[in-house]
Amino acid sequence: MGGGVCVERPSTALRSRSPGGGGMVLVEGYASLWGVADLNRDVVAKGAFADSLGRVGAGGVRMLHQHESRAVVGVWDEAVEDERGLFLRGRIMDWSAEARFAQALARAGAMDGLSIGFRAVRARREGAARVLVEVDLWEVSLVTFPMLPGARFSLSGETGLHPARTSTTAGCGAGR
Image 1 (cartoon, helix red, strand yellow):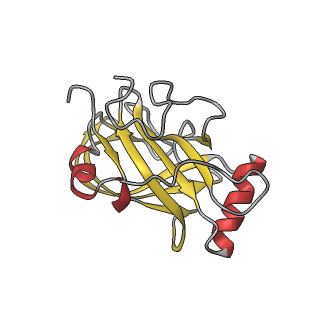
Image 2: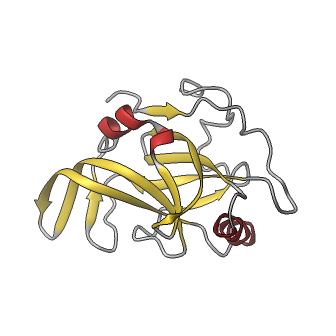
């Protein structure tokens, strides 16, 4: 798998964030970390998202609030499998009351978790753990309590979670 899989949505809307409310809020973070067991003893193997992301791209992965299918709160513009895990960058929009609520929670630091919604395509047992070798990634939700405690997001540009990806317009090859 070399440098991993990177999928970007062809968009130039990632330029600014409205600091005082309204508009969009840019977020980035890791939704999955390779080889780390979640609270349900699921472990995602490196490369597990490659086929799914290759088929649907970042734009085919929905951004939901708390895994509610009726609560699409934004869009994922970038999804990258890197050496650490599955990194995403996207926009929480202001198109609904639920989206504005998610924006407010994110701005306040009251919600910073990410959680994946998926279908296991291939998995194996290793002791008590289920190792997910290949998954169809359906959605990545903004959540209060992630099943994988290390799956967190921040407002873009505030923590430098993914230092190799400092430009949102540089493309997938930047920093590699």
